Amino acid sequence: MEKNSSKSTYKIVVTGLMAAIVFVLTLFIEIPLFGSRVHFANSMCILSGLLLGPVYGGLAAGIGSGLFDFIYGYGVDEALITFASKFAMAAVAALIAGGEARRNHASVVGGAVIGAWTYVALYMLKTFVYRHFVYGLTIEATFVIMGEKIIASTINAIFAMTVAPVLYFALKPVLEKANLWNKLK
Image 1 (cartoon, rainbow, N blue to C red):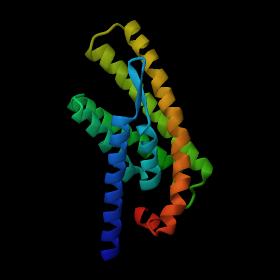
Image 2: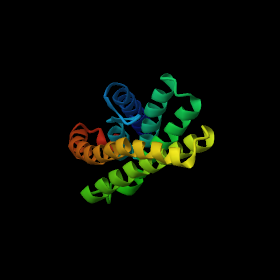
Image 3: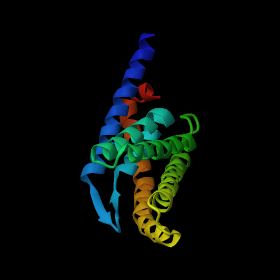
């Protein structure tokens, strides 16, 4: 019982740490672009999934991003949608990368790529629904806005799918050497 309790404590602590990193990167490192923004938090969302698995990684990604939306006035509905879409991004990355027994470079990169594009698809869906159905814009105006937002989203996705696997393979040996890797699995 003691061993499982210790392992759960480590996972919860690292989940909180990753959520804080996602929040801070969303807050401080961004480049405005066409009514959207390029930021580096998505790479940490995917890294959370790769390090912590679909549930804890998804929670870290969702909490960090959703909390940002809530605190900075995007509203509860936006925060919940962000929580769900970022959770999905990290969870998909973790599920595609697979369990430790089959995880290799190809599966980690594949997980990062599919996780990043999962978020882009969900973000575009949210943009379409909000702009067309909630705000009442014409379909043409909605597609113009989506066209602008896809540029920043694609840059975010490419950065995330490139950086997250590199960080994963850099951190894994360090965590193993410190006897922390098994506590996260």
